[in-house]
Image (tube, rainbow, N blue to C red):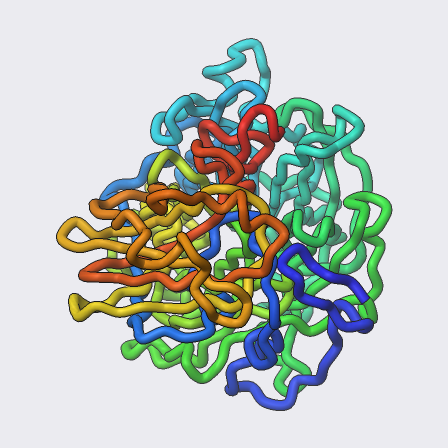
Length: 548
């Protein structure tokens, strides 16, 4: 039996193996069906994306949308990216964007020219980028991977490994490669794929692993088991596992895309999986409604994930259509929309809202017409905001007029920190009582919006009795709008309650609450994991320099 950071106990069979029984019902989330008696909240801000932390509440759950920048923040302009005017592309696919706190830079790996190179860029602010040859004019290529005869890239994924014992393994990369016995410069020179032409001769296809000390100079370090072109990976720090997200097909209908799951302790030595090692993971369901104009059955194109504070944040890329052949004939990108999911055990995904988080615009000629993809790492925390980078394709080709794989651009969406979900009293006053909590720290912090109201808290023992000195009457009300504000009592802090099991009752008066956490110091560091990092964090965590 394995006990996770939050007190969840994993079953002996892990990852779980279960049969697909339907194509349309939402998949169960066991830890919400049979809730944990005591939740450990020592790591990270505690978000209200589900009822995992809630014993009682009369508050309303609200889901929030990011603000999407109107224009792309990165688009094709160099010779490699312009791809001879055929299929311009300068965006991650899924590649990666991370903040490296060793040299305080935003770093991006991206698809430079459709099926061409792996580009690299750096930024001071996450908005304005310098490409590889701007940074290092002496370099011969715009790509960080040298071109190999007859070889073209497809999807890729990058991760910064903060705990690599060997400096040369700090940056990790996966790339799906196709190798032909003749040179291919542009996508239209590639032979038809087997699903388009059954008589075509398939190339050698393989998933290749690379490692690097600086993210620029890479060496090949191995290959993985059999996989498809839409493979990705990420690191789960809660379980200390490298996890691969693999394209699979439903056992009930082989035409339907699903996702397979594989985890390993070692990024290089543990990736020679077999088909039997891949377990069914997740899929779309009946609440992933078809596009009202296209009407195609929705499918799960991809699942990407990252640690955010105290849970795993997932982005489901939901394929809306049209199929490849129809998209190719129309010369327009396929349509993917991006939706959010959350996991507290690293495997089962809770999807409290099926609303699009980031949508393809479907507007002809727009930079974000379709084929939306998340970026590996998913998001970064920049002060009081979360930066969600995403790739979209316009379909605009200078030479062809239009093409489904032309016009790859990078977009940015911004969301309040922890702002996925809030609980609100709707102006009527309300409260919530947490489940039993195990904690380590002295100071209670909240992320709240109550400009015209207030938030108070009281501390209860495990039997729901208010502890003397921590009542609502003893609490100093919090007002205003802040992503980090401390709740205090007149004569007490939480130090006296260390090693005790407690509950917290929050009282809202015309307010919203997004998260809470108990910090060791008055700076309010949550010890949580910060997705792909951000300025001011250390090794991807919200810790002080002494906690690093």
